[in-house]
Image 1 (cartoon, rainbow, N blue to C red):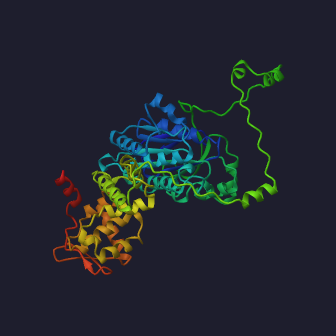
Image 2: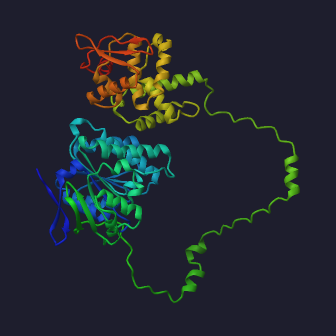
Image 3: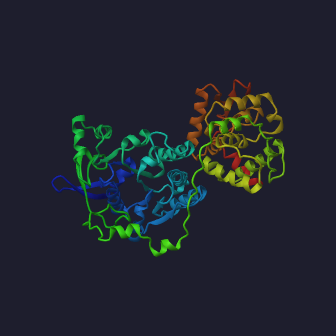
Length: 502
């Protein structure tokens, strides 16, 4: 079904329409300096498409919460845990509810973590719930920065990964990204490059004008026109809008943002200005006066030399820990038990590492595990090993230690799959099925599991062959071991074992 969204007018007052079905397949990038009308454009798009498609708005300033009054959007306050936001996002896709994720009141790092958890929950939804969703991200440069800023690397990687998944891999899951940014130079290139439709508004910096002209296929000398665009005027290009650069004037909207641009009003200075600023009010007089003491004078040179020549006092004994003393072996056993409990959840394989890590930290605090908890890289390593859980004989063998060393050369997301295959080879067990490998990889796609085996083989880590019954055998040249034949199309053995235990 073709749905034409009325975005306003083109040159000559002809209507400017946007093909909604094409937009869902090709995504949209909006760029313009502050005050160019980006939020107005997004609001027009959301209002016109609200009756036709489910919507999710990532709103860092709380401007789009007014859509709830007119169009029934549910406002999700982001002052929740990341695990709770992930579960809410999964239910949003399941029940097809249009929502506004309100990030107002959070600092930048908290906004990035909350948006990453919410987008991750929508991205990881079950295949049965892959309905079309228009995902609008305002101020996208906050969530997909081109360079590291003042936030932690962990928060930046989580947010950038979620935005990359939305723009690069979201189409097959029904997620259509619409991102708006003030500056293209501040937006990560791999995120911006996935959009096929563009609406470029007013901008002044040469680097942004040149990049906007390049995206629209215009010559460099034509980039100067972006300085002259009025508020609400954009140049559009893309399969959902126009095959050639097209000037567009965005139409009116029915709702308004809570925050608006300041308006000039006649200025009249009060007559008694001196009395107003120098005379304390009754409320101020009732407050106690807190005076800071004068800072002490700096010590003289002789005093400093005398302090340096004094004997150092004996070091104070470390305060006794609130928790009972425990050796490292017992601490590791507690952490291993928590990891086993964490992976006992049937949905653990399909939850993001960030969500699992937060759950792990909470469980450590509940169990009162002494000492600092493992950092995120160490947790990822423990998670990969815990998902394998080899028996005692295999765990103590030289081949298993070599397999652990080989796995350290791989990225965190594929270590678990490699170790499961290595364990099966060392134990001469049947080769795991595609469904089992897909679960370990955190996906439902068996084809992705097969591609991962090919990737391992291309790196020279293993060799895959089929016997005369089309059963798969995986051999490890470095370990001198290979798996027994296994049916690649078999069921998920891990799921069956967990179901039998329950």
